[in-house]
Amino acid sequence: MPSVNETTGVVLETKRDESRVNLLFLALGHGVTDAYSNFFPGLVFFLSDRLSLTAAHVGLLTTVVSITGSMSQLIYGHLADRVRRAYFIVLGPAAAAIFMSLLGSANSLAVLAILLALGGSGVASFHPQAAIGAGSGPVRRRGADLAFFISVGTAGYALGPLFATQVAVRFGLERTWLAAIPGVLAALLLYATVYRRLEAGYRSGPEDDGSKGDIAASPLLPARKPRLPATIVALWGIVSLRAAVSTSLIQFMPLFLKEREFGPTYASAAVSLFVFAGAVGGMAGGPLADRWGRRRVLIGSLLLSTPALCGLTLVPSAAFLALFFTAGFVLNISAPANVAMAQEIAPERQGTASAWVQGFAFGTGGLLAGLAGYAADRTSIALVYQVLAFVPALTVPIAAMLPETLHGSRKG
Image 1 (cartoon, rainbow, N blue to C red):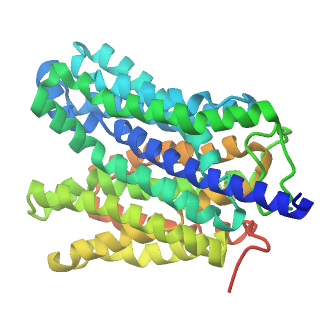
Image 2: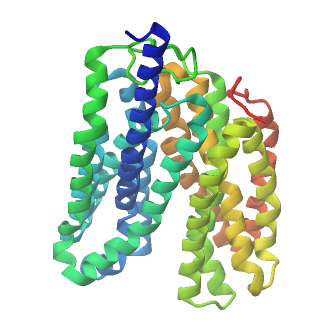
Image 3: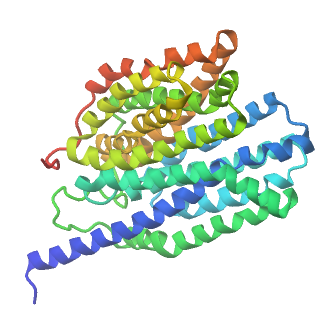
């Protein structure tokens, strides 16, 4: 018979192996779901002819996606903390895939808005519960795990418009429903793997694995529901302002480059490069946050972002893409640290905490970017970019007051 310690070690190792497998499938689901979240821009060219869409219509529909797909994550985060079932991990990708893939069949602006709202709700429902699962492994590896999870989602988001356009070109606008197949298959895969493991955990209840804090508080436990600490609001404010800067760079960069007499191919390549740089930054930032601490990586990201952003309106064209990549990299290097910090600040309400610094923060950032666009129309995009460049640095004093949540796990 193995000793108690040996038995505990076996149980702990099994749980760690399962967390790695769960992370892989959850990251895949994240990439697929986020691809559908950015499906609409790839169909605007085609739908504008059928439905006579104006820029105002597109702006309104983008707001619908932002509210239902991002800001409503706060609602689903609360539900994820309350409902001891992993429904959203499966239903989210399936709903996002089905409703977003039906956009090509919309015959009116109202139907298009309804489909976007339903698809956005599917996107929102997946994220909080999936983020809990992705961060449920050992605390010392949480930053790297969340970096992988977030970066795969970012890659999917970047590929979403291209995927939508290719489906519409190859099969026709009326048959974009075919694009739902990968999402439905991903949902079935998540049901057969992660969902069943989590449901088994719900039925068996908590076990003492002897890790004594090495494994994060399990998302399967029936958590107490204390109020969220005020530091979550401070972290949300920092991430919201950073998201406003990032969204403004993505939304207005084609117009900014057009003013500088660059062509559409260069402009679209620049935006794609920026999104890709964010994914690379997130992958690098997770392990750094595990090694150096969440707060230190966050502050470093904010400080480095300002000089990179300041140069965008000043450098010659030959250096622009390199600096734009650098800006995307440093802006997003703290993304995994932000989610890890939120989960560690509120371990008993991880779903709600994750939603605050993921969807709700990015939705708020999108609305703030709309104000930046309003200002750009009345001044210039270059001037707005110069002002936005100082926003990350201005939030450093707030970041410095946040708690360092990675205790006893940092290695030299």
